[in-house]
Length: 245
Image (spheres, rainbow, N blue to C red):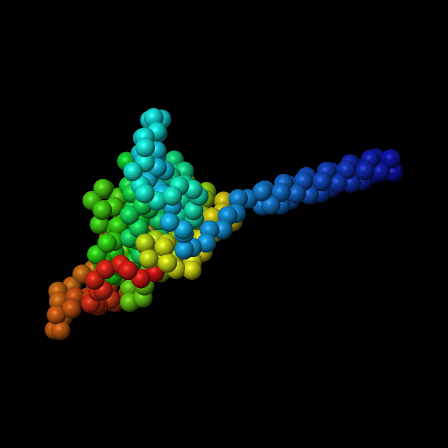
């Protein structure tokens, strides 16, 4: 009887030890994966560098290189790195941007759409209508865009590439910010952070579904009103162009 009990205790001890070892191994692998996560920081303003060659190559992959007509010097830059990360998209690109007027970034997004990448855009209602905004051309290209109907700004500045790469920071995607402002962008594939931002995108995407809004005739002062899940926004005067960061 004691022998049987001893064998049972030994078996239980071995099972517990094996379980602990497996748990430790799993935690070790998870920590190692976290340590191997890609992390890159880009700082702006970005020095003037040619991006035409990069975009032309992306538009015609495999084509013979042609002389670049751009007079700017060639070489790496923060804008060039940002473009490369965007152009790495193969399945999806989710953009959540307050202001978007950079022609180079807009061209890259439309290129991805033509490739068959699923592109979705969330933006701020007031800034999307400004002169120079890329939102109009994106919509004309057939890219779905949703915007806020709130009293505050949709002030996020992030992108998620293929559901696995996060691009976020202080940078508005405007020429002013890229060329003149002190800004930062963090690029990472750390799953914990990517998932959090992707969940936020999906939440806002559903919240900004046009089916959730009810529009009413103009009020007595000539401004239109709309409601979105109990919130009210009144039309306000808009600046003329996207110039600020």
